[in-house]
Length: 256
Image (tube, rainbow, N blue to C red; front, side, top):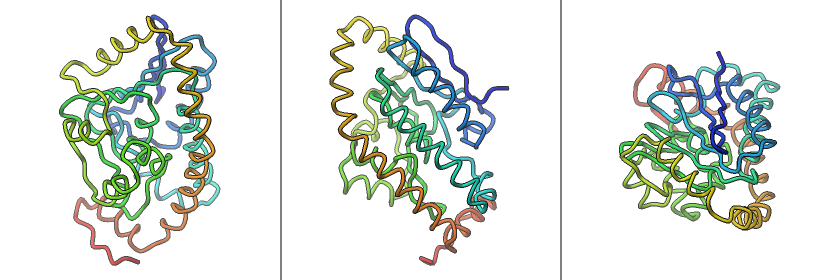
């Protein structure tokens, strides 16, 4: 079964994360499938892309079960390279990208959601960066994407605070653009169809002017995040964070 599903309907490409039983936690296979799907979507004629997740979450983030394999540097570098390609591909797509967030968007899942031009979320959704909870720093361009939406100080404090904010607070902060009580993909589809009646060529020109200028900065953050994660995964705090997560208890960090 594919872990990422792509459909094209009425000039809109729908990309669904498809590990509902794991809250769409992103493992190596899923990341590689997502990159392949994005490469396909990049070449099609659809001008709107909707990112969503099947089940009760957009994405719970990176699959913690993958952490044990990160001891292998080649495995780690391969995964981080794939993540970097996904984020840059999404950010630089010459299409309007809409994230449709239901349930949780956490960690890497939130980074991917924030690559979009519009983030639509249900009122009961929960958004959080949460990497610090297992002794890691954000990746998937999370530093850059939070800075773009919140500014540097609020981005730092949001990351450090280990908060998952609800829809109303996320919108007030600027993490979310539109809240809905409707089925979130339905809301995103309505927006997509409205966008298709606008002068999209001009709209996409403005997008690409902004994003082309920022591409090098995003590449810098992606690379620095890769270096930081390799260093941090060898810390005592990271080992404790993962162990506490697996044992469903509160971690005891020592700043080491």
